Image (cartoon, rainbow, N blue to C red; front, side, top):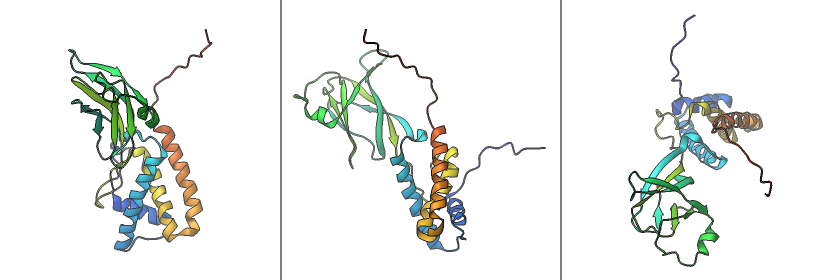
Length: 220
């Protein structure tokens, strides 16, 4: 038997909303249903940002340092996972590890204007996402970091969702659960259970599979 030979299946936003309404036992027949469905989908994307790591939203970024200890990152940044300082004074350039510290630890640093190669950074997760470096960079360095970005908004109805294909099933079940709160409360409990199972299954697969070793500290 012949197969399609393709692996490109995806759902446009309008198809995704229609699928979700069908799981609620309804047919999508009005423009309002499209509007409320897209709004619920955007809220669902925000919920996923709170649930943890989504590997497809991890990006590497480079911020050239020009002598300031305070830098503002892109507005769609959710968090900084790890970072290094790239020393561009050497050829080739060298990446040097840097430690993340808490707000209280940064606050207690006595002289934040000390000039040297940065060795620590504090991440301020506020409406304006900032990173504070210590010591203050005094040469041609770059702040190289892996960040989690926000999932892109649904946008127009002919778009596809900004999700990895593995998450399409739980995207449909999650949207069905969200819409059931408004249109089919009798199905909410069942749809929530399906959604949580789908999300757990996808999240367990969406992880780094590199090997890791643990060495016990024997106190020697």
